[in-house]
Amino acid sequence: MWRQLILALVVLVLAAVRPRRPGGGGGGDDAGGGRPRDRDGGGGRPRTRVAPVADLEGGFTQVETRLTAGTPPQGGTGTPTIPRGTGPGTQLQNAGQWSPPTTPRHHGHPFNAEYEAWIRRQTGGPEDGTEYLVRHDGEQAFFDANDVRDHDGASSEVLIDGKGRYEQFIDPDTGDFKPWWRDSEKSGLPAELAQAERQVRVADGRQVEWWCAEQATADAFNDAFANNPNLNGRIVAVYRPPA
Image 1 (cartoon, rainbow, N blue to C red):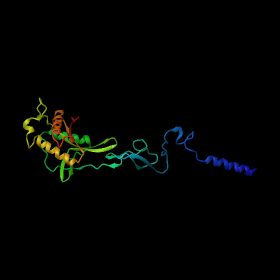
Image 2: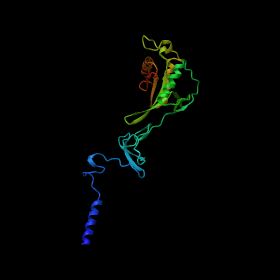
Image 3: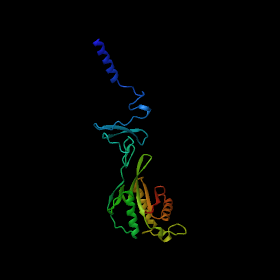
Image 4: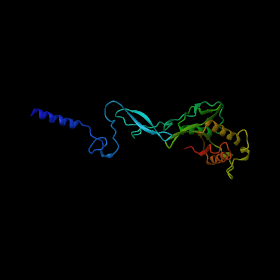
């Protein structure tokens, strides 16, 4: 009789510890047919979670992130957050570095210097008098700022230059640059377009934006870019009035 009781107890213990098959009813990680619940809460050692991230070719790479037990993953989605400046499956390399300008800056009007400083604040750049220097194929150009933007899961760097009070050089009746400034080789439109071409070359395919404090200035520059085969489609002037 004791042997039968012992055998019955063994059978009950085995039945109790036998693992359940997934998909069944009741509790557990897969209960209710939903996705598995996060099991990283509470004490214990850190876990390693592997989450798929789409790469640029449409496949998947495995990004391993170590999560501290009891600490929710960044973003609260259960998957690793892609750092700013990277695209899926790739690491974005910025084009340049912050450097002191190599020639004196003559802004002409205090507003122009203030506008450039405002652009750097808007894009998170330093406020120490440096500018964003980009070099490519033995050539270099300065920009007032750079900005990294995310689009469809990929990140790209935009190179930005500021244009302050230029509306004084525009004919209000036609919207075109005044002839004397349009034809001035030293400090007029030709010099501005030469700067734009140099910036586009060193950008090496990155988007170049000229932020303009005045709408008329952005429109006039865009007309000039459209008529230049070296600039058309490779640089854009945008109206960004300071707040």
